[in-house]
Length: 201
Image (tube, helix red, strand yellow):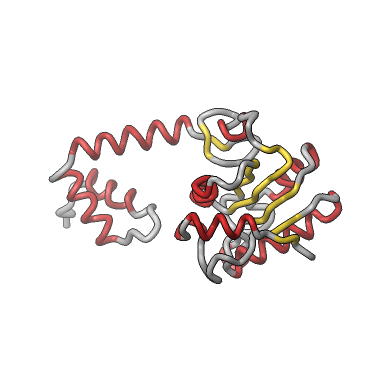
């Protein structure tokens, strides 16, 4: 029996399911919408995805997404190289920047320790962060989320960095427990940065 769905449409539906939180029905609705209501938008999306996947890499210094080997933040002479803020995701970095109270540099982990999901120190490339600190000694500010995984990541990194003789601090809990930086207002986040404290491991 032949499928009633054209094979290219089926391929599109399957491809859309790679997005987080998108199940079979949602993917189907998106595919139908793009083809029926917004073919121009579909083509723009396809082109943007191709350009992004071909041209965006990880910054060699902070691990954030960048179109160049070193991103504009890391290359800026106006940033305080004596401060290094460790965040989980690029969205967290953007939130930190919105506070306008932090002028240091960043390191983006692209996740947090989560053994149940198979995410350990190797997957998060902690060795790159250690090398970064060794090359440019600084205060390391842990701005991981106040979740079980974020706290575990901050504690693990504080222990890992202890031999480097650098000050390691943690942003203050002005943030709600269980909260994620991406969803916190910039005023609360600014206060948390200003009231950060040293991590004792």
